[in-house]
Amino acid sequence: MIVHLVLFRPKASLSSSEQRALVTSIEQAAAIGSVRRFRVGRAVPDPPAYQLQGFPDLPYVAILEFDDRDALDDYLEHQMHGELGRRFNEGAEAALIYDYEVHDAAEATRLL
Image 1 (cartoon, rainbow, N blue to C red):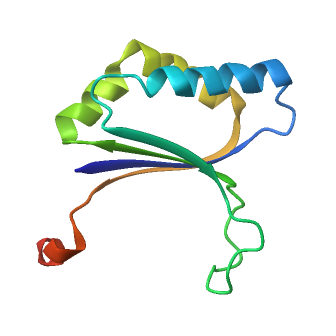
Image 2 (image 1 turned 135 degrees about the vertical axis):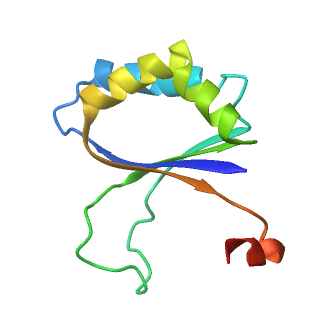
Image 3 (image 1 turned 30 degrees about the vertical axis):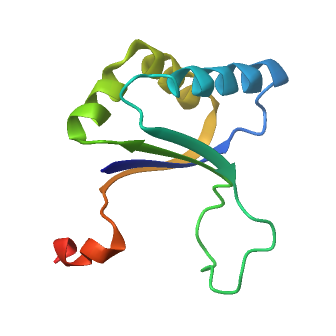
């Protein structure tokens, strides 16, 4: 499985209508056929002590799951992702985006 991880901070100047348009784009992109699962969230207030300090504040996360690399590529090339990408790039002040191939912990030896 491939996990597409997006950590981000929207611009403080984003208007209410721009925020709604971004959320609508997220909802539409979640319906793209190659997406197995699309979750969004916000950082936990007062994080536990193990959280390292000094890293950028990226209070929002999007976690997308795909069966394989081809499914991720289909998503990235989809018209609705293009619209989401445009709104995201216009509205994000900072972001980190990563893709990981993941396995069940019982299969951790695949990482070696």
